Amino acid sequence: MPEERELINEEGFESNSKGIQGAGIMNYVRNNAIGIQVAGVVNIVGRDFKGLQIAGIGNNTGGSTLGLQLAGLYNLSFESVGGFQISSLYNYTNARLSGLQLGLINKAVRIKGKKSTPPTKLRGMQLGLLNMSKEMDGVQIALINFGGNTRGVQIGLINFFNSTPSKERVRMGTPIGLLNFGSKGSYMRLYYDEIYPTNIEYTTGNCVNCSHVLYSEMPFEDNNQLFNQNALIFGWDYFQDTWGLGYGFQRVFYNKATIMPSPDNKRRVMNYGLKFLHLNRSMSFDRSFNLLSRLNFDYGKKWRFLYVFAGISLNYFLHEAEDGGDVYKIRSAKIQ
Image (cartoon, rainbow, N blue to C red; front, top):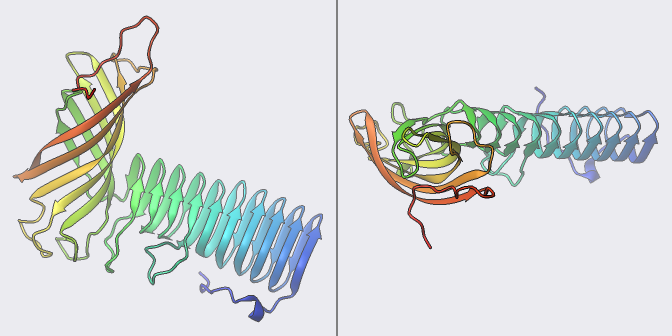
């Protein structure tokens, strides 16, 4: 991987080309360039580029790019990007991204963000179908995200990340998605509530403030160990032949007695969050719109190797009315 360099300012920028280049097929600059390149097929700059590149097929920069790369298929910047890469297919930098990659497939080695070390004002984001990075302190939004060492936010259907606690005193990342690989703090719950007698909940997510202390991982400064968890929920009422399926995002707090390993750690657990469930009036899937939104708070204590918990919830039920049919009701106290 090439050494990451900062783009020098325009006064010290030794350039082969300054100004505007336009071509039906290709624009080519051997070393550095400042300005605008517009080509029907491809733009190529051997080293650093500062400005705007627009191409029907692709833009290639051998060094760093500061500005905007806009292409029909791909954008390549082999050292770093400070700005925007926008294409219909593929965006790539082999070093730092501070800016935006927008395309079906986006790849960067490092994505800057507010949790970067050392602190920086630079921010990076990837938005597409598939996002990839080795270190991600910014934001990834896609169907599938590969974050590597992640301190930023991943939003997707499937997220991959490294959950190893950092040796630095910094908060780790937040994955938001249905499936999260590299999870820490996952749990399974079986409980009864006012909607269904039987509920099963399984979570995946990450620890926000776990430390590198062996066998403890309790945070240095915080009073509680904090996890962000994504819940997959299945509810079933055997007597009414109804069921529901949903997703929730939960913040989970375990008490800290000491930073060292101790049986007094994690004796208590609290969590709160928001859950969404699609309710079905029969055992077949109900295609009508029946959405239950739930704001919940739970408190539990450890009993042997299990947690026994109780909680309260506030439900908002929104459903599609049927002409001449019965009103769909749920077993929950109403607030008039």
